[in-house]
Amino acid sequence: MINDIKNFLQDRFPESATIGGSGEKTNAAIMLYGRRFYKDQTPVEYLAEFLLVFLSAKSKDGADSYTFEVSAAEAAYYPLDHVALKLFSFYPSSKLETRHSSHQKKYIDALIQIKNRLSGGTDNQKDDSIRILQSLFYGFTGVAKNRTWVTHSFLPASEHLISREVAWRHSSAKRDTSINTWDSSREYFDTSAHLFMARGGELLFLQLAHLFSLSPESIVKRLNIENNDSYSHLIFTDVSQLKLLLQKNLKNLLSGSLKKIDKLASFVEKSLSDVTLNDDNKPKKATLGWVPRASVPESFLFAQELNNICCSSLNELEKLDMMQMLCCLHVLRSLSFQARRLSQSEKITTGFMGEYAWIVSTPDTPKDSASRRLSQTSFEIIEGMLFRVLRIVHSGHLGVESSMKEADDHGFKIFRKIGKEIGLIIPKNGQGQRFVLSPTLLRLLVAAVIKPGERVRLTEFYRRIFAHFGIALAGKQLSVAIEWSSISNDTKDYAMTTESLWIEEALRQGGFLVELSDAVSIVYNSSSKEL
Image (cartoon, rainbow, N blue to C red; front, side):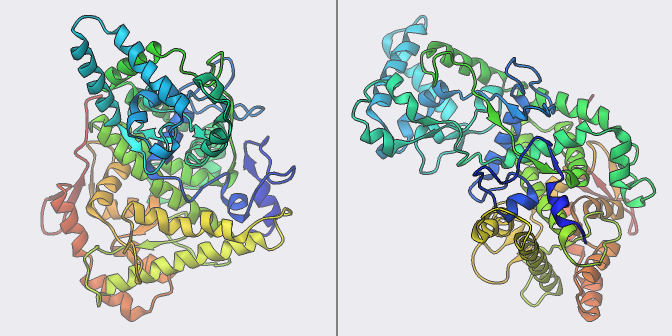
């Protein structure tokens, strides 16, 4: 239990960040977890925002793109908006009620401008080419929902498909009868609202930026894993080398086989050079928030897992899909790690530095199953911990006016929401919420904790999953998790002896299990590539 909670909450990265005061809105969730996790941010937008900060310049002069560098003095980045590509790709299918007449005119002009830049072919053939191009980009839609065209987002598959959030203040613009051109409408675009890209991806980036800003000695001291067998696969990690590798691999991912998409996007944007949000068309500054300095352990694990996925032989879209799910799983892990630091329990989880546990069952396990009861109890205990710590922070440690409802929405209820979105928590509606392990999540766990081409014993796989995420699958780790969760010995004994074979069957069906004998099974990450 942290004794000096106030100082603990103020220990943040970057140091120049402020919490509360000067009219800045905050709540207990922001104070505890950083600025910020937000309930309306979608899984794809966590990844898109994370990659946006990574690839963007971190200073006005354009320095430090594709890096985890952050200026301590400025704590900002300069993201591109790619608004011309959005107009071309999303306007025809956007919500009718929010289409402004000035944008309609500009869209028609945009089609003419692009058509004029196409060489060869008849007018009909050029029109067909434009429609094909629009369909291609629309096929990379990440989030559209019930939004207007400029608030749609692409799947973050290449550099030009990753852009800052831009909002359109439609109601205000509709009342302004003087707007009749694109230029006169520009004042109603908002690049600072954080409605959808709500800083969750920024927070994940800052966790890694903080990790990589520390000296190797400082990291080793904070992790305290040198003599811990549970982390023997990570003890010899050179963090400075990991940083360079991860930067290189993420950059290669965004400039891989989908580079041709970037070339087509560049053609569209050069054709529509007048479709900008400001006269000089230079990216506007975006300020970064902060993360707790205590987040080093979970950040270290996240960096390792991201790099393993990047190094695999999966294609770019498969890697992005896995990274998206990993970002969400890491959000849940970050919430649990940080909440556990303030919880009043003295219990420990031998084999996992997070000092909490998630007990999972198979999604289709019967209602009277012991493993189902364990996973349901485990979920209830984690939610209870998340609920309580927000009240610890709220009661006397904020020093600013704040909302407990907002804290719950973005720090307690968000755990259940994201867990359901990635299939870790079921059912989506109704009673009996519990942790489960779907085939998709199992595939992610194999890719995250086992290096491409590596083979480990089944017991080692169980150890790594617990050491990284606190997910207890079987054996010693399940015993530790049950004890931490204060579950009765009768239930423990029954579950330990009868209900762990489903994990081996799931690994077998996924093609990850190699059985050498009745006593020895190997888990194999087959997504290797020649380096």
